[in-house]
Amino acid sequence: MSTFHRLISAIVDASNVLGKYLWGWYTQAFLILVGIYLLIGTKFYVFRRFGYVMKSTLGKAFDRKKTKTAGLTPVQAVLGALAGTIGMGNIAGTASAIAIGGPGAVFWMWVFAFLGMTIKTAEVTLAVHYREVAPDGSSIYGGPMYYMERGLNHSKWLAVVFSVGLILNSVFMAATMQAHTIIETVQSAYGIDPYVCGTVIIVLAMLAILGGLKQIGKVCEFLVPIMTMIWFCIAIAVLWGNRANVLPALGQIFKDAFMPTSAVGGFLGSSIALAMQQGAARGTGSNDAGVGVAPCIHATADVEHPFKQGLWGITEVFVDTIIVCTLTALIILTPDGVWSSGKSGVALTMAGIETVLSADITNLLVTVCIFAFCFSTI
Image 1 (cartoon, rainbow, N blue to C red):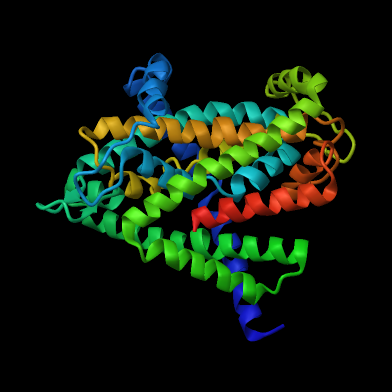
Image 2: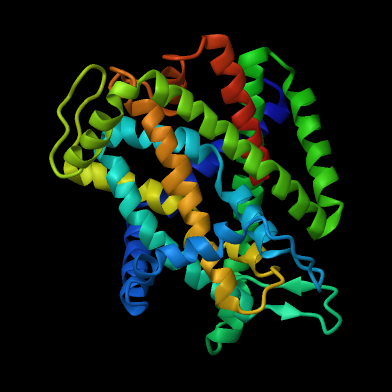
């Protein structure tokens, strides 16, 4: 093994160890408590006005709007944020949650996703409200570090701590880990040299980034809908091929959420607490709610009122977790015997797809989706 490979392996191992400490049950519990506090404080707005939110966001997604500043359109901003949140967690993370916590983990994923919607709305609204806009509109900056410094008295130190964490997250998770996943997947599937694949990723990322904020917005506006639609079509194919099991799978999700899941096949069994913990990890982790990366992108939106962009925060979590993660869950749960096979991660998701598509086509489609999901995060 070369020095470079050893360095990459060390970075990956260090990231995994650090992730276990930072993303423990205590972090999830804190986010859940914040979500409950905000949900009660907003008088359950996300439930009361959900129809209005969808009408005001997805209902106007195709309205063409020119920006008056250097910022993005509201739609470009949310697609940019979705590009950062829809990643390997939607393919492998959901599968791992089911492999460990059973079908009941999906129900708790839904529950905690609605808490995440409330958190994301608050984050995005604050990011737009406290952002910095140049007088001539030539530049816009915002994010948690800005509303920490401006919205909280004498909290510049907190903004600095967050900024350091944001840099580390961007380097080790959004860049290194996602690129590593693409390279590993492509090499495993087609034997392409890691250096060639890595070079392609660098060049494509460079072309997107060097064009500035608006170019990144255009790339995300193109890539996110396509990759989401591909995953949607894959899921529809699997659901149609296993259509007799769709309602039983949904019933099992609700049943196993409130009673221990027995050991079956290669599945070792799960308690309600474990199902809840896995659902919480996916429901709070897959959509960036509370992490603080997405608000930096939303803050650049050219929008009339901060809360209008905050509504897109609800839609972002809805698309990422309620739609994309649920599609992955149904890909796994509808085919007979797949979810309890003992497999986990991408292998479990692929096993579900292979019940209706050939192994070669499955390999190609999953590789394309992994590349798109991970590259958009980068």
